[in-house]
Amino acid sequence: MGRVRAYLAMSLDGFVAGERDDLSWLERRTAGAAPVAVGPWSEGPDGDPLGFDDFLAGVGCILMGRRTFDIVTSFADWPYGDTPMLVATHRPLTGSRAGVSAAAGGIEALVASAQATAGDADVYVDGAATVRSALVAGVLDHLVATMVPTVLGRGTSLFAGLSERRELTVEKVARFGEGFIQVHLAAR
Image (cartoon, rainbow, N blue to C red; front, side):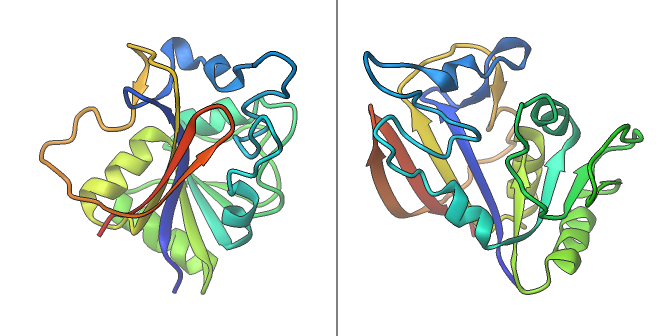
């Protein structure tokens, strides 16, 4: 069985989206450089890979929150290829893609369903509430957080609402592009 992992970008103050789900801060530009965030935060301004493609290559199933799913379906390009996806929701999915299905239940049951689909590959948990729930339930193994040198002040917080302190172990830190810092953390 693979690991249960999360991969996300966040502001220095811990937000994964600005107000009204604004992600424009991920597309900062520097003079004469390509966008800092390309697609799902997969490439820095100098073409430095942020590791998303390698991360996704090891994933056998994505478990995504409904709010995040609704946002990513608005992207011009679908960044997840044909990787099977479970969307945590109680509402039906309309016009969804092949390999994408709705799933309801507690986070432990959702992760178990995703693991059954993934087989020996990893499960990618995405969406602030879904990642937070997995962390609180103790089912998240690994977190890759790429900090963007921006302070948003408001928005969707990754960690808001945690009821107790969580100790994580830093496994690796890397710097990319114009000040992006990526931290790989063991969550349990």
